[in-house]
Length: 118
Image (cartoon, rainbow, N blue to C red):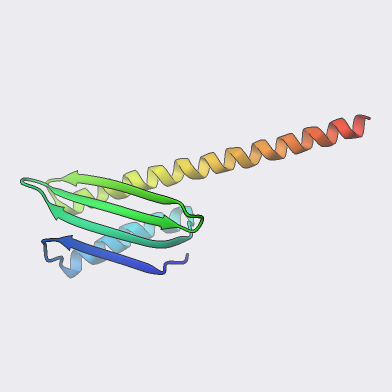
């Protein structure tokens, strides 16, 4: 896992050490689960009128960018929602790549079979 820059920012808020640590742990869980190669990520926490909003921006190695937003009455819960959405997007993206790779392998095997029949 390669992470060049990581940033946790509060928009007009003073973030405590506990939230920063919680944020880092939750995000690293997803990175290690899917073994993604990450260039950078940024977590932004801001307070709306009655709720918190967490923006999570992640840049992966192959110029792939993910951005998710989580909203909840609790800052940690908003982060959990944003991380869950990010996890879902990464899982779907990796499944898509896997299907494309399997499709290419099947096509090449079919071409080899046709060539062997000639």
